[in-house]
Every structure is written in structure tokens, then in C-alpha cells.
Length: 229
Length: 308
Image 1 (cartoon, rainbow over the protein chains, first blue to last red):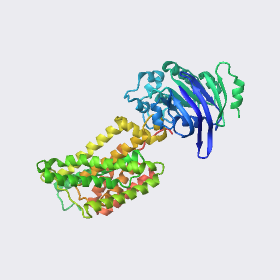
Image 2: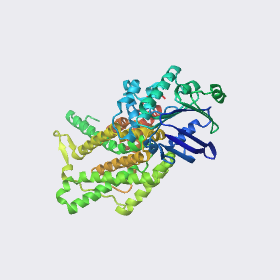
Image 3: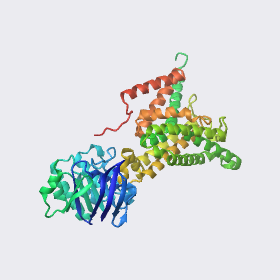
Image 4: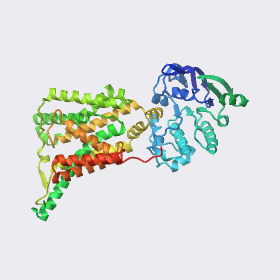
């Protein structure tokens, strides 16, 4: 579904991603793990067209999206839940979700989004900025799903969220995958969450992948060694 | 100072003064609405806002001449045609300016200030070269002239009522566009987080261009309406720009309701004080009050309370 070849990205002169290659199969959930500053967020932003790729090819479902603007990538089926959630805090919950509908041309939020996150339906008239962290995270995911994506990118979704909600989130993400058949790429530092949610775990270090293994039969000790400071 | 007047005369004076204040209020609202979109929602400091208004005024002037030369039978309704044309002309110029200049400066707000100030000088010179340095007057259809007698002593000018109706109509239209349409949602999303707005699928470049165009178009309509009140000259836009920014900043950038409330309080304060004091004293007192309030409340009258 997602195919990345030789992807390089840089801030000015300093290259952060040194030629990444990976593919995500349809319906697969991939966790990209790594410590701070290893390039997880840059990878997400490069896939989304927020940070320009220096070279390399990114394609979704066979269509190349390298060089497209963010909104064109959304139209090609990529959706993004950024680190820190970045919901539109002065807009109501419903309006936030509706911004995600832009590329679909729909006017009304599909019911199944509120079925996933009933709390958002209860709070649809409230301003996004007045929700709790966990609710904002759900809102950011709902907003991303509104564009009807083929691939969902989540950047550190567990950051700043209480442990009980993290478990729910892993379950919800798997449910979204099962119901919609989309692929999910999630960047993560929390190993337990990654093991809960992912079918495959990759480790990024200094802009290169250093480990790639399916969830079944993963060497947990080895992965956690990559993550320890 | 009231001893020379009888009670009924005083009542009439207050009523007419209050009405004059309402007309000034409508003028302020018309001036400020376009800027409330451009400055309030997009954060662009558009110093050429007055010149976009004057473009609307000149379009009205041209339209009135065309109608009186070629379509004298329809002269009484030319004003509505002129307002539509003013909206289109100013809007298109606005979109062109956004494409050529503003879009390169979104990350440099202070440079926008300089660039749009330069644009205002260029436009002034263009108007001077095309229409001449002298002010031009627009022939107003008869039905807008004159006044409506309410009682023996109280009369209200019809052009004032026209401006008020226009101000209410345009405010309502902008409110609906801003808070009920998908365009409005996109504008507000971009205003809060440009990068993220793009990443949820909003075509930020096109929305910015359209928004700037609509803001300038509304300025053009305001300029068109002002031909009924004053004459139009190449530099007349400069007279409006200070008051316009004052109204938008005082109301709280980003709040349409704030803009209207601030236009109301400033215009009423000014017109009531003008009756008792000299015009410039009234202006000084109004400005001092606004400065004082803004020092205590830098975010303006109406600002959203949110968890950060």
C-alpha cells in the first residue's frame, strides 16, 4: 500500500533521513520505534509533504506522491495524526472533524466515525481546545479518518496520554484497521503499546532502519535495547 | 449649554445625533469587515486596504457615467450594478495581489506591512494617472438623496439608511460565510495552523487567495457605498485606513462580533462627543480611551478563552 524507496530528507545542510526503504502491505500495522531525535517525526512529516524530500520515491497504492503538496497527498489517500495532536482548538469538535472531509467533498460526517469515538458525538458542540488530551487524540484520529484514507500515519500517539487510555487506543487502532482495511504506520517510543498494536516493528536509528521484525517471534530484549538511552 | 433649547428640541437633537452615530457605525462596519477577514483571519497587515475601497469608489464613478450616457432609463438602479462590479474588480485585484506578493510573505508579517504600504502608494499613483488628481463626485440617483421626515423636527437622511441596510446585509452575509460554509471552516483552520490545515486536506494556497479576494471585494463594496457620503480622490483611502485598523484591533482580531461591537462603541463615543466638543478633541478622547483599554486588554474586546 505504501512504498518508500531511498527516501532522503534534510533540514538545510544536515541530512536526517539517509535513504530509507520500506513497504507497508494493505491492512498492515507497522510501528516505527526509536529514541528522540532519530528521525521518526521527520519521516512522518516527509511522508506528509511538510518536510520536502531531498530524493527518493514515495508511492501509495501504486501512485507516486513524491513532490505533491500536503493536501494533494491527503486526496491520494494519506492521513496524518501529528505529534501533539494539533487539533484546531478554537473550532468545535464537529468542525474539526469536518475539516477532514474537504478532499472527499462530503458535507456530513459519516456515522461510523462517531461510532468509533462516541465521546466526540457527546461533545460535538464544544471547542476542541477544551477537550482533555485523550479526547483531543481521538479527535485528531477522527479528523484524519474523515478524509477516508488508505494509509493512516500516527506520530507518537501515546505521548502525554494516561496508561489506561493507551490500551484502549491500541484496541481502537486495530478495530479501525479491521473495519476499514487501511494500513497504519505509527511511530512510537513505548514498546508495550507498539507490541499491542503492530503487526511489524521497525527500529530507526540516526535516520536508518536498524531492525525489522514481524510481531510474532520478536526479540523484545533486542528492541528495548535500541530504545534505552 | 442646553438652556437655549426646549425639551422637544433637545430630544430631536439627541435622536438625530444618535442616528448620525448609527450611520458612522455602519460606515465603520463596512470599512472594517473586509479587514476583519484579511487581518483578523489571515493575519495579513494590509496597508492598501483603503486603496481597495477607493477602487470600488472609482468603479462606481465609471458605472454611473456609463449609465447616464448609455442607459439613462436605468440610472436609478445603477448603484446596485456598481456595487457588484466594485466587488468583482476589487476582489480580482486582491487575488492578483495575493498571487504576486502576499503569498510569498505569509511567514514575514512585518514585510507584508511594508509591501502593502508600497502597494498603496503605487495604487494611489495609478488612480492619479488614470482619473486625475482632483476628487470626483458621483451623481447619486434621486431616490437616495434627501431625507425622510420622521416628525416635524427629526429627519433622517435616506443615504444613511441605505448605508445602514448595506452594513447589516454584508455583516450577515460574512457571518454566514465564515461560520456556516465550508470555506469559512477552511479559513479558520488555516488561521489556527497553516501546516496542519494542509495536512488534513485543505488547499491552503487556493483558500488564501479566495479569502484575500473576498476581503478586498468587501472593501470595494464599502468604497462604492461611500461615494454617497463623500467624494472620491486618489488618496481618500488614507483617511479610512487608521480608523479601520483601530476598529479591527480594538474588537479583537479574529472575532467578527468583536469588530461590530468595537465599531459601535467607537462610532457612538465619537459622534456623541463631537456634539459637545470639537471634532479633533472627540477623536483624541476616543483614541486615548481605546489605547487605555488595549493596554489593559491587548487581545481586544472579544477574545476566545481556550485551554492552551
